Image (cartoon, rainbow, N blue to C red; front, side, top):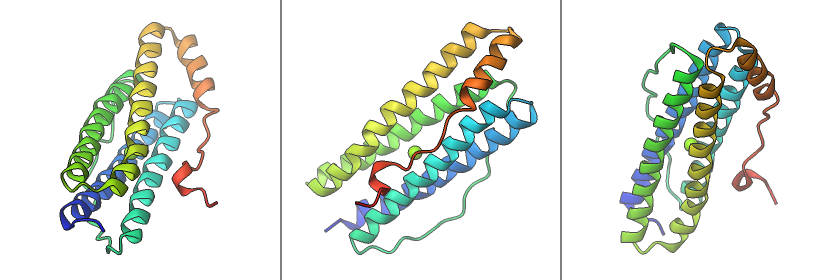
Length: 172
Ligand code: MG
């Protein structure tokens, strides 16, 4: 069974994931207001993914017979200067999340909790993907620069992103 310390840390991470969801939903609103509906869609999918991350953690605490305590979600930024600035904040934020997940792994290691270690491994892989995606979008935005046609093409591309239920939530 899970230690109280790790259960509390995962409970805190549920709040962090919900905050992430709220942050991306806020970015989606600002980008939508700027006229880039496709890029806003990318952020909306990001919002859905973060909610799913929280749900995966909730399910894990349930499996460990722990009650989840939901805390208030802190306010988020509501406007960004440019699309690039939003992607840069995305990368900065995901790096912070990676550090939080690493910390959870450290606690699982201290506890010699192999089940938690296995559980958290999925999030470690997910963070590699999150950081890579954000970095790719920053690179693309920098290549596009002030070229509006380039931004319109990126907007079309990101309009196609769809939310896929993450594997830990897919019922067998
Ligand atoms: Mg997440």
